[in-house]
Figure 1: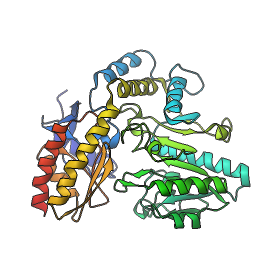
Figure 2: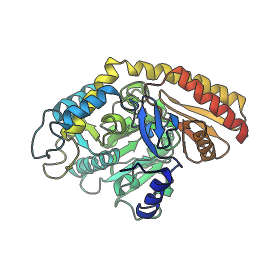
Figure 3: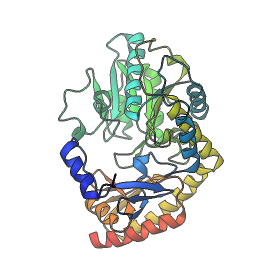
Amino acid sequence: MAPLTFDQIRALEEKHVLPVYQRYPIALERGEGVHVFDVDGRKYLDFVGGLGVNALGYAHPRIVKAIREEADKLIHTSNLYHHKYYGELAEQLCRLSGMDRVFLSNSGTEAIEGAIKLARAAGHKAGGEAKSGLVALEGSYHGRTFGAMSVTGQAKYRKEFEPMLGGNVGFVQRNDSAGLRRLVNDNTCAILMEPIQGEGGVRECSREFLAEARVLADKHGALLVLDEIQCGLGRTGGYFAYQDMGIVPDVVCVAKPLAGGLPLGAFLTRECFATMIPPGKHGTTFGGGPFACRVALEYFAVLKEEKLLENVRRIGAYMQQRFRGLVEEFAIVKETRGRGCMQSLELTVPARPIVEKALDHGMLFNSTQDVVLRFLPPFLIQEVHVDQTVTVLRKLLAEAG
């Protein structure tokens, strides 16, 4: 069968695929390290990383080997039976996070749904159905199912699908401790937030704000739920962003890089909440299967043995240094924000045209919040890749300004 051309690929999608994506005009075919290649053979340096999924880049030999070996053994069973990787992966996640229990899901959104169910169940047990309120942050993003949309603090994701989740959901501005105190009360079952808002423009919660959230959760018997789907599992240079922020949550949600590109998410919780959801009241068909769990174990082994967290910290500091130079050089660059391999440049002009023009220079960037360039590169990148990126950015920013 002859390979499809880009025009053929696009025509098939335009005819048969639900038009919910605004794709860029390339079709990717393969990847190697920190680069991807399109169907016409063009090479791109990838600073999108599958929106934070491809932390080990592309075709990492150890991930490929694990996939091949497990595909030859057991891809799927069901949650009716044990397999040898689920408990091992759960133990690994608990050891790294300080949590006690794990539920493995298919995605980050599904992890958020499970966390909301856990919080509601714990709230009902403590105070009846009245204790069902949820407090989240303006500018947040937690997913596209109804529960996750209900706690997403951006109206653009909710307006065509309202009404949202029943019960009270309140939103407070990030780092507004006084506003948080006004919203949280004895009917609150959970405070839910991203330590670093990703889709919201790479905006970090302050240590003081997170500490206040912990105090309020304890005072009112609510769960503190942290969404580390984008910022967790190595992205900031530690296994979890909250570990550098002076707090311990009751629940933490993860996903994106967990299984090296395969669908896998999880929510982790403390022992005291482990029995809040009784048997038969939560589950998943595909989440936590042997195939994805085996690859996830390899992901953590690679992080440790290749010392990639050290590289993330080092290269993150270098990106910040080079990006600060762009802030000083260009009036249209308002600010740089981020940690590790989660960085951004906020502009005073629309960001998407710059992303589109970068394709012609062999670069993949991402735009969010209209005016923010977001960078989520693989953990393998080196200074030379940052330098290449800054060279292209300088040219494009000069043209845009």
